[in-house]
Length: 311
Picture 1 (cartoon, rainbow, N blue to C red):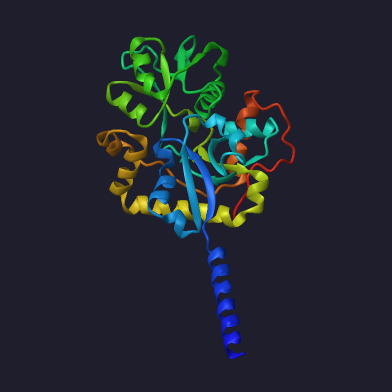
Picture 2: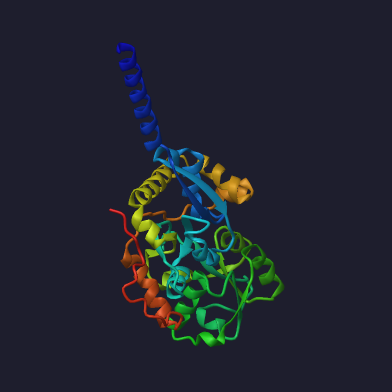
């Protein structure tokens, strides 16, 4: 009987250990991001074991086009990179997606986006873009939406501008060849172009406001509402990654060079943007107003929850 009792006690102890182990198993999540400095915190959190520390087993996938991601959330990915226009258009089309975490906020003290022209261009002001061809990474993307908003805000007829889609790496050559008159560019491409003699007309995103929500993270709304602990762990991991970047900028740049495949000399010159990961419905509301003013958001979103906030 004593032997049986000891066996039962050992078995109970074993099952307690198994249960404890299962409870502590990292939560697997899938995320998609773009190979740019914008998303450096997620790679730092992955490479430095920060996600694992917060109970997340994160698999990362590099993608090139943010506009394709809302439809993949909840299927291929749990978290995906996005922007205000992309998210709002996805929700208006019926997709059950919502913003769950911030990433970068654009400010006048740390601009990541520029409208760039050649140094010898006759274009001196925004008004001079009338009748010109502008290169854009995507006609429906946030930079072009911001430019259209800026033009309208300045009283310039947006129909007088012709936009053509050009990948960021090809914009400098297209400008030099005269195939486009201006380019919607981001770091490091804008910085390189300006260093080579180009001129900036300004940051179109700042036409929406200073300290404005730029790219951020989205999830399937229903999934996010059911998993607040995962959202909290995600945000905490990104915040810790930002602290690491602030304290170890050179080591962070090694990570940046690894996933962007940019030369170390270029990576050294790229400024870190304003990373901030808490997000509110107010942050997204400005983009609702922008799209409505441009006639790009005709559907009534009603009481659709656009942001799942974490306490």
